[in-house]
Length: 320
Length: 320
Image (cartoon, rainbow over all chains, first blue to last red; front, side, top):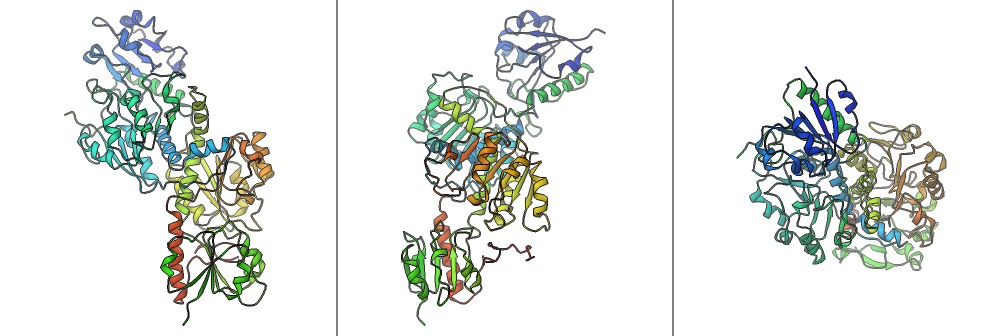
C-alpha cells in the first residue's frame, strides 16, 4: 500500500513531522500552490492557521483530502460551505491552548485590577504615586464561550476567587444559555470573550452590549477579532461606558501600525499570543503526529469539528 | 471612670474612629508633638505606619501607653529596645493585607510569565511582535516568610498551579526552615519575599543569594525594602544573573525620582501598594475600633506582636 499524501500548508516545516517519514508523502504548499495540490492529497495539515487559503482553494467537487487538521482551536479561517457540506473530516488542536489562555486571562484580570499598566507608565516617568487596587476575590466574571477554552478560563478565574458564570449557545448543567447573557453582562466586573467565531457570534460585542456593562467593567477578548465590533469598543472606552479592555485578537492581524486601536485609553493591545507558551509549536506537531497515526490506521479521530456549528462540541453539548 | 486617652499618630483623622466618641479621649499628634503626649496616654494608634516617630519618641522609663497598635502588618518602624523590653502590648493589622498582597503577587508572576510589560512597551511603539509566554502551571516558587501573608501568597500561587514552597524561621509542618532556603532558591522560577524585617532578615537577599538563583528566575519583594540589598539586585539584573524582578517596597520610600532603580532592566517598580485595595483604610479603622472595644473592656487582644521576634507568631510557631 502506498503512503498517503499529506499536504502541509506552512512556510517552514513544522516540528516533529520528521516522525512521519516512511508513513506519509509530505508535500509543503503555500497559498499559491495549495489549490493545484488539493485534488491529489489524502490529508491536509493547515499549520499556518491565520491563512484563508484553504477556504479559497477548496475544490467545489471532485477529489479532495479526506481529512483536514488545523493547528488552532478556531476553525473560522478554514470552513467554507463546500468543505462544510463535504464528507471531509475536520479536526482542531483542542488540548494545546486551554491552560495557556486561561493563565493569560488571569494575568490580564489581575493586572487590570492592580493597575499594572498605570504602574509601568508611572515608572517610565520616575513617579511614585500610590493607588488602591481592586480586590479580585469576590468580583464577578462572565466567560462567553463554553468550549474547553472558556471552561478552563472559568476554572482559573474561580481558583483566584472570582465568581464566574459561563455562557454557551445552549443552557446545560453549569452553563448559561445565550438568553442569560445580557443580564449577566449588566452585573459583571469582568467580561471574557472566548467564543468560537461563527455566523451567530460575529459582532456579538457591539455598542448595545458595551452599553449594558457597568462603568467599572473590563472586557477581554481572547477568541477571534470579529467577535467584537472594534469601533464600538473604542467608543465605549472613550465615553467611559466601561473602565478598560484587553484585546489579544483583531479583525485584521497583524494590527496595522496606523490602527487607532493602539492608543485607545484603557485598552491593552497584545499580538495574538494568549495561547502560545514556550514549546507550543512542538506540542502542536506532536499532537498532529499522534492524530496522523490514528487516521492512517483507520482509527477514529479526536477533536472532530461539527462543521455546521463551526466548533468541536463538548460531550454535554447535544445538537439542538 | 474617666475615658482612656488615645493618641492617634496621623495627619488626618482615620475613618471609623468617630465610633469611639464617649469611650476615648482622642488626641491627634504628629511627629513633633508625639513625645510630649506619650507619658499621659493610655493607648497609641500608629496610623502613619511609615513614620519612625514612635521609635524615636518612646520614653526610656516612666509612664507610657499600655497598648500600641500599628495600622500595618510589619512592626519594624515601631519597635525599639525600650518598647520591646517594656510591658506595653503591641498589636498589628493582621487580617487586612493578606488577600490583597497574595493577589498582587499573582498579578506580578502572571504578568512576568506573559511578558505584559513587554507587550505594553510594544503597544506604545505601535509594534505587533508576537512572543511566547511561559506556562505558570508546573513552575516552582519559593515564598520566604511563613506568616499569614506568606502563607496566603503560597495558597494563591498553588491555586494557579505553581508548585510553591514556604520558608520560615523554623521548620514545621508544611514549612521549610531557613537551612532549606538556599537549595530551594537554586531551583525556583519565582522567589517571593514576604518576610518580616528583623535583625535576622535585614539584607537577606544579597549578591550571594541572587547568584544562587537560576538565570530564568524572577524575584518579587512585597515585604520590606531593607530585606533586599538594592544595589545587589540591580547588579544581578544588569548581569542577567536573574531574568526579572518586581519591588513594591524600598529602602527609602517614596523612592526618589533620581533613584537608579527606576530604570534597571527587567525591574518593575511599584509604590508600596500591594496590600492596598479599595476600602483598606476603612477596614483598618474598623479593625482598630473592634480591638479598642476589647482592650477597654479588659479582654485579651488578638494580633499581639512577639516583641523579641518582631512579628505576630503563628499558632504553630513555638518560640525556639
